[in-house]
Length: 280
Ligand code: PAF
Image (cartoon, rainbow, N blue to C red; front, side):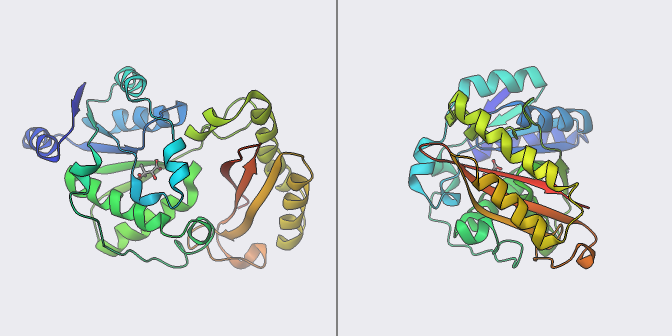
């Protein structure tokens, strides 16, 4: 497995692959890799001749600097995992390599990027679009793989790809969960064992809410009340939305697909956890 740090090196290596007619899959990550990332890489390895995994802790998508400082950094372990998965290339650039100048580009895809995470983390999706558009430009992948764990992020990236009419297939990959149901996330390593047990209630309650046979607003209230009743958990938002546009729905018939997206604060620090459930 090749590890490259510069854009010029990455482009030169990929050029050699393309001359041979090889297809390229990209898995963008911020490192601190876990089984969820491994599932994206495994899928890309199956579907492409060459898989590039980028490891870059992108500062422009963190509106909370403490969150950026706390983010786990585990490059050596990440590379070991990627080697086992069969990735051919890792792109691990420095911040200066990616942003020699501040990126002033503005991306705007409302309501997809303005609701939920967009409302509570101003500038977050602009930063995601900045880095993902740069990675697409460097790698020119045939396919790019994203975890459905960050459901809203996939919707925003899909809008960006449609906007620029890029010929890149966005491949959403299912959430990988711990045995308890907790969605795998790099942030889980920041939870104590007790907090992990608490966090598992989030998906349990979301799953229960699928079988309630109640209205959208009753389902919403059920989820928020049940989670907030557990000491150590606090819902920041729970929104039941159109699965494509992410606009709020008032009834189950308002959209072809309906998804409930949630963010919960867990534990003493507290750690911010996101998850979602598909209702239809
Ligand atoms: O999902 C992530 O890890 C990041 O938002 C991404 C897509 C790698 C961009 O930094």
